[in-house]
Length: 254
Image (cartoon, rainbow, N blue to C red):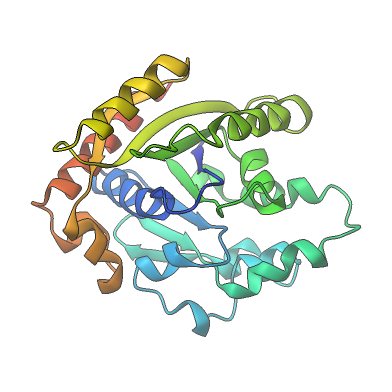
């Protein structure tokens, strides 16, 4: 059965999409079958894998509204071992259209149940908000991985996110756990990055990954070429870091 990890933080610009794309690609490079679910209306994970998101007939939006099956939506083997359930801006309307729908927090989970046994890992890229879409992701997931940018306001909002995870666990998904925190945009030249890491470690009982994702120009360039970093520039520090994170994530299994 696939291990399902939601990548979530209601703060924007912390590296959620970068982590979703590159962690999934690096896990796949180690021979694991991966499904990436883009549940962010911006669709940046979809386009970051080189998919023309606005040309798609079936996306997660049509799936959530019941207009197509999960089989109809999945784009298989976009790169070796990685399939994608894509998204685009249409998804922004989903929350309004689901008003009054019963058990709407479980829509994604019920659909993914049909296919989850085909994959070793399912990675869900959440929107930068604690919305119904994020709740659907957390109800589907086994765990939540939180990217945190190494900056002064890193802890801001984290307690709110942990509170949401605990609420979902209490009311909707008793099996949900905190996967852990991964630090992104780490700059070894500044004292601030090191201080933020120490600060979060001292405040959080949650697992903090050893891998630090650096500020890296190649990481920033890769999405515009529609490639994950391990394909775009496999020798870059960004690629090495995400490979290291993939090893940590796989090592935690069981």
